[in-house]
Image 1 (cartoon, rainbow, N blue to C red):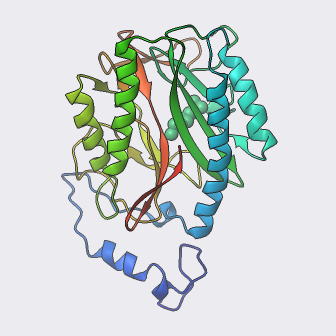
Image 2 (image 1 turned 90 degrees about the horizontal axis):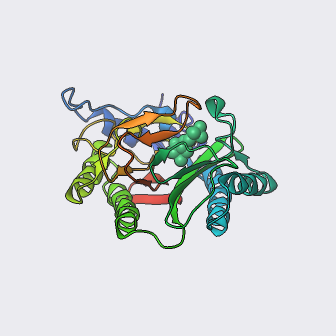
Length: 290
Ligand code: MF3
Ligand code: CO
Ligand code: CO
């Protein structure tokens, strides 16, 4: 690309006034093979217009999570929460991205107690006093996606469950704080893993976070327990999720053989997860969906 060409990012600006310095900075870096360090491809970089579109999806997604949380109470079945959230998202001009995603049968994921993630809402899953649950919602509008999840609790929960939910949120936050432009994605997993292990918890590594924005799941894979300075270089304009899945017991997970989706802890221990969609900027991160 020449200096006076229109920049590859789609901003409409000249390359020399847009991503020329950016490309030169990346080309001047050395990437360690041993650490699995990778250059970020241009397709992962979002311009200002792309970010605005992700924010539109995020606004609906945040409202959907607020609504879902307001419905959590003992006695409600998780299908009712799914159906109300579906109506909300569609009513606000969004699309619930989970519906039919690789055959997923419902609009959102609701994962109770020992369910790690991808719990399928069901009339048979009735929330009970003492339960902890993750509600994970993704919304797309005009081809752009925002993905976030939160934990909720029902009635009086055990001190162990309370701590797991609270510390898992802190684990997500330290992961987000470790995400820095011109550093590597592995820094996120190093920070998350450290805090998890300090608390005696295990980190699920079969699943992780991901790039998001122009599609539901993009590169890079975001591990929540790995060595620092590994994986893809983070650069301004990248959008990704940080979504640690933390188990009170062992890290091993199993997928339900019948439905092909529900991920459980193998040992039956409690699991918690929080997720935000973040934008990498030159001076830190901006939370786009939470
Ligand atoms: N929202 C989940 C994530 O955080 C993905 C759910 S995929 C589904 O990446 F098919 F289970 F809905
Ligand atoms: Co999600
Ligand atoms: Co996600």
